[in-house]
Every structure is written in structure tokens, then in C-alpha cells.
Length: 167
Image 1 (cartoon, one colour):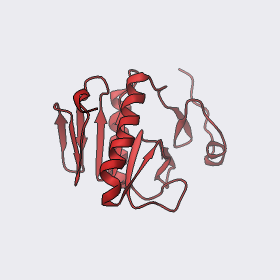
Image 2 (cartoon, helix red, strand yellow):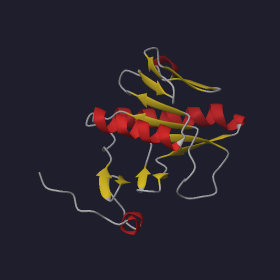
Image 3 (cartoon, one colour):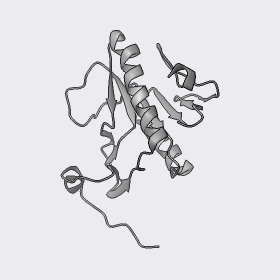
Image 4 (spheres, helix red, strand yellow):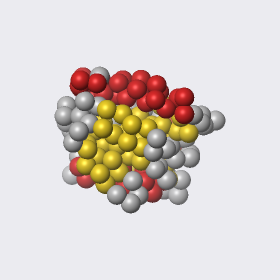
């Protein structure tokens, strides 16, 4: 298997990728091309999290770049993230309150677990993993993993139902 060519942070930040890509220790990591179910779930969560969270002081961002590690640079792009208040920076260097990853058919379980661990180590309080076809998934915190079968995802004072009847 060929070795990936390493790319500088400057080159990554000044380039456009289609689809967008993450950056992990010099390697460009392409993100999955969104399919219809993924896109619909992402739009739904953006609208719903804004409606619920904005009155409570939260801001919602779709595909926002995060610098999750600066010692060995990692730039991650969650499908949706929620912050308390609005950060003043273009690339967030402080952890959001919530990061959401919506599953795509070509997502690797190993890569997804690594990303969840990275978000939690960065200081993200909640990470949701959502299957857009079944509306089930997981809620990750630093101390627990909660399996969600009923489509009700919680993060602190935020609660969202992903079930089709409520969309």
C-alpha cells in the first residue's frame, strides 16, 4: 500500500477540497460524500438545534473546522457542532459543547472511534453519533457511552428527537 504524501498545515489551510477534507498530522483525510439521508439529517439538526439552543445562548455551526490538537495538528470537521456563545475565530481552537457525526455508508468504525476520542480529549462535552436511516446512535461523554434506540439525543439542557414522525 502506498504511503500518503505529507502536507504542511499552511498548504492544507490554503487549499480547497471537494469533498472537504480533514487534516491529521500532515495527512489529508477526505470526508465522505454526503448522501441524501445524511444531508437531510444534517439540515434537520441544524434547524432544530438552532430553534432549541439559540434561546439558551447556544450557536449552531455546520461543517465548522476545529483545531483539535495543536501539538501535532489535527483539523476536524464535525457535521454539526454547537457552542455556548459565538466564537470570535474562523477556525475554532476552543472545544464546542456538542459535536455531531452523522454516519455515511463508507465511514469506518475505527476512524469514527478515533475521532470521538479526539473530540472528547479536546474538551467537547457531548458527541452524538447518528445513523440517519434508523435515527438511532450513541451519545458519548468523557465518562459514558449511551446507546440511543428511541431517537432521543440529549446534551445538557438540549434534547432532540431524530425520529421521522417528529421531523
